[in-house]
Length: 361
Image (cartoon, rainbow, N blue to C red):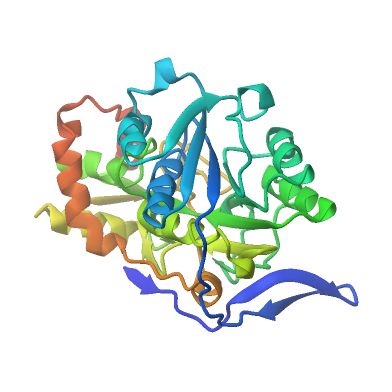
């Protein structure tokens, strides 16, 4: 099942009026001509956001900006792995690639940058050195924080997340956002959900294909109709790349997600169809089997609850439009899986086997 998320309920950032949270409606704004700017991307060394830096750099270069990536970690250990193995191509396209520690200014590339993208920090401790060095000292004009839609409070009544919805006070991302407001610096916050696409360092559709390709049942937390959004990394990159020179984005939060949502069973059905196989879904209760609680299931790649959001605000204020959909990309994703040779690799199905055995009792 795949559902459209086009809605008029696009909201701006929350503010308080008389103690009550309010939001301002989005206003469609004309795209402004943007001069080339110098951009610095501080990029994480792992996880589902690691390949954002690569694709964002490519998109910024395409738009005529100057790009420097400073990647966290040891290049001798990471440069042969995805997405970092693609950095040599990025350098041929004109980017500068360096390696260092996001919390140690002595390891950062020299020079002044007009736009700083933080695609690494998850809390104030990891973000503050970068903010203070480049923003508080007046060197940069715009700080862009790549946070996460996971900072939203789950809502069982209205599960679709909109900018301005309640967020977890304990989340490290929220702590960073409060600091940015406190120091009154020009910033933008982007909140991605699940991302797929070339050179990822974290499983998304691969988890499902692993099982379908081997004719195994796909264990799905019941009821299986939970909705989520899967967004192509190129669409993530085009949204983030709309920031340089764009005053519309200053002080704003944007959900970064496809305008289509899909159910867990829908993912299985779409991939099975692309592979010419009959879907084989095994629904189970993670809590009943001692394999999960509080919206998580051991071994399953997604939250077990609804997790999707609305991206109308970015469309209206940034002129952004997604070019991809998971269902439209699924054939290419399956081809890429087999081209990588992953179907020949040994996959750990021990948790699956526990589920299958328990469900047979």
